[in-house]
Length: 291
Image 1 (spheres, rainbow, N blue to C red):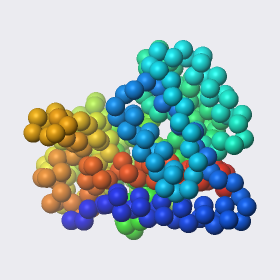
Image 2 (image 1 turned 45 degrees about the vertical axis):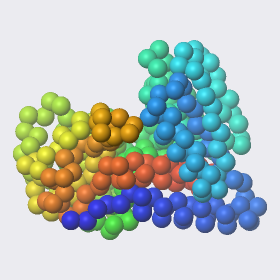
Image 3 (image 1 turned 30 degrees about the vertical axis):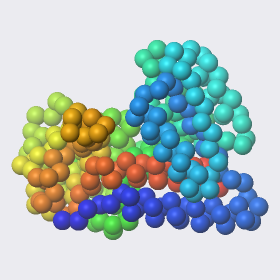
């Protein structure tokens, strides 16, 4: 069993971006500039955005954080996005989700300029991804692809089971794994809460991506020997023995599943770090390469 070390791979990706950015800036080209929009003061969202801003600094990007309180009017937020769309100094825009209930996430995402949509959620980027055209890929699935590539994991012809059908992870992950690329070329089964024979399907899988947000859901009796297991879940679970009162748990029962795997991601230290690395890749491409 080998751990898929998100910290190690993310560091390699960030160092590559840092070196390329420094070289391009030295030749007189502009500095990539990421604008992050944060609505409210949700604890996890605050942490995620702070990590993204810090990562921008580490690789030599400029970043701008635009903050709004939780009761900001939808139109005010939309006006701010329009302003960033029109600002030629801004290369990438991300809106930290989830948003308050009174704001339409779809309306916000659709307003983003597709060329600045570094989270890869705009319908145009999603459509291009489905057709196999150059596009900004959703950061978490893209990060998983980068990890599989780094470890040279053979995916061609493998049966991949994706548990979860969200537009952020599950659906795009199934598309990327099925594309005629490397990594890719999998036969993909996408499962969800209404899948009747989930255990049987998982037992057939060479690769399992667990992305449903239920701590410890994937147990050892659902995983065949030498499977590759990617744990996307990260949930705060109360634990009074910890100073902060909680522990982070993934969707996989790591302790019991890991011994059966050829490769497995830990939580924390796995996919989450790769999500930020992928976001940086998208921002670099938005500035220098376009898509």
